[in-house]
Image (cartoon, rainbow, N blue to C red):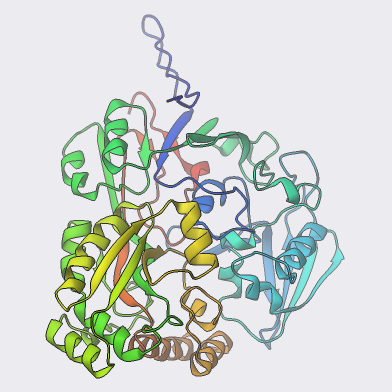
Amino acid sequence: MALACCALALAACGDEAVAPRTSVVVGLQLEPPVLDPTINPAAAIAQITLVNVFEGLTRIDESGRVLPGLAERWEVSPDGRTYTFALRAGVRFSDGTTFDSGDVAFTFARNAAADSTNSRRSYFTQMESVETPDEHTVVITLAEPSALFLFNLAENVSVIVAPETADGNATHPVGTGPFRFRSWQPGESVVLERNPLYRDAEAVGLDEVVFRFIGDAAAQVTALRAGDIDYLPNLAAVEQAAQIAQDSEFQVLAGTTEGETILAINNSRPPFDNVLVRRALSHAVDREQVVAGAMFGFGTPIGSHFAPHHPAYVDMTGMYPHDPERARALLAEAGVSGLELTITVPPTTYAQRSAEIIAAQLAEVGILVELEAVEWARWLESVYADANYDLTIVSHVEPMDIGIYSDPGYYFRYDSDEFRDLIAAANRAAVPEEQYRLLGEAQRMLAADAVNVFLFELPRVGAARAGLRGLWRNAPMFLNDMAVVRWADANQ
């Protein structure tokens, strides 16, 4: 397998210092289907391009705070509907074209268009107007206040693209970020290089970043130990974390993510359109056993679609304790017997391991399960786009994404006017306390309706060479900020 062009540190003669390394190889389990995050929802895209190639008007730090991005500052009207952004001057795209307010207006209109494939199209249809009084000013007026608006602008779906290059971003992304696209060898790697036109190019510590795709969990660890990989942001073989941490050549970074891992249910497909059946599934699954067996103790059980570390979190794990007898009684009450179903399993280690455990648990209550392993591209097409599935297992890593349950066309096929009203009210909330209260009600509703079987919050368990600095321990968004990464000085 061809490896990326990774520059080796050069040993000098005599007492001369060792030249610092300026290249990093990052190991990823999933290869993205495209490289434009505004047209495809795959989180694997953001792992490569968000903040590295593409930027938004805002960005977030490791703690989840909203910071300036392409907008250096902003003002908000007293009614919370109008945002006036002052854009950074002198910014250019990596192809040399100038970034200005017209690019922002173009991007948001493209995302809001009727034929848009942006997974958060609602972020942009809520904009009543996008005005550009001059090249460095954008004025956005929302249909109603949105407490998460600035945070949403930092997400991968909101990055700014140029009209001159937008159509080619799927395979040859052009952005304003610290790195520019060099090459993509399908099935093997994507290579980025330092963008010499970046506004602060001298502050970037790396000349080259290689994202290498290794789907097998054991092969990831082998590549790390062999020196073929420098950094695994998400260690698939989490059972290896303790052993790796004992080796002084490596470091293990354990933290949190925004990834709600769920046994997703097709709510529109009989018999799963019956809440009694969905509740039976929830009682049949033992979350603690899934976390222990699939994640080797890493991960926090959840009972609704919300991150436990968020102040608005409500612990709903007690609503459906593991109770096979109760599960069988609910199935009988629903008039369901001899149920046979398929769990469609994407190619992630946590999903594969969880599926095997859950299949055994469902068998205990008389449900016959077939596991169907599919490649990521097929999962996106068949499950995510077409909702052609019974059950599936996936981690939703987008931050604060409980609002996805407002869309009846989303692949869960959950349709509740009451839930939509709750989320709309939470978005309009003027103070955090009111927003948190409403988000709590939303969590309770999802649990009561047993929309999905909520399993655990995906942990962030990364492994890297000991000399690599600037790596995020937590992942408030699914990204790898490589501009702040560098190798430690040879004398350290």
